[in-house]
Length: 252
Image 1 (cartoon, rainbow, N blue to C red):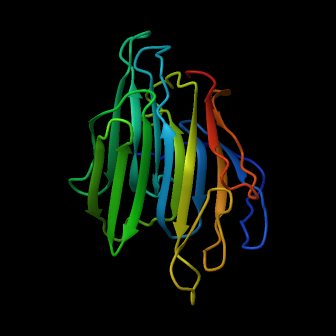
Image 2: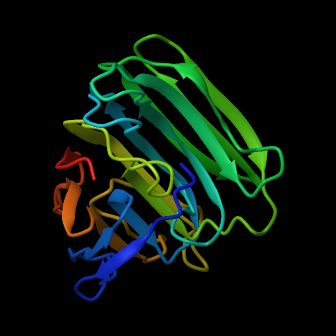
Image 3: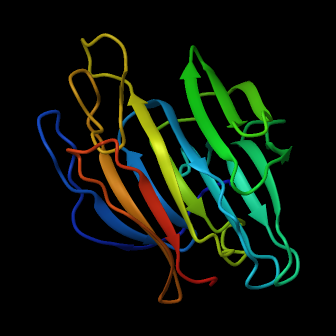
């Protein structure tokens, strides 16, 4: 939440996904994120589905957040939706909530008051249309949902799109033990190249096609003080339907 992340290490050189074939993601380590980041284009939609993990609390005030959205990659704005598990005391049962957030938009900090439960199927999406952002989180198990439409000035760049497991609070909190989570039904759309008609949706493993803008893909691993806290699977662009699986490794 407010996913402006801390970059630790940049791995191999980035490669663009070309319309005609496979490529590789750039590996980077972050203090607060694991997952995937697409950047270098103007994005118009992103979505995913996951089953909310049963989280445990290895230490006091640990948290784990799962989300999709735009602009968390260090440009000062965010347009994000997801869920969070928040611990009190070590060993306590966490509180689970769904949330949305529009950071740097006056009056649009977001809400976290929609209850969910571990094992619930969650779908989440952010879509940009005609100067407005449609943000939605839906608990497909209990029927609860958040749906809101917000406007943002030109400061909302939409130049990165993310599927993320986060140690919430910009590093203030430890990472709660979430076991593993799978992001499925992943999709993203970016503004097309000049002269092409309309954005094209793609599965996460195949991020460009005729009419899509090419962009860089980053494979993020959460690392703090030399310890891997959360790591995620990689993708074969030839099998875009494969889920993105992220796994807890340590609290802090």
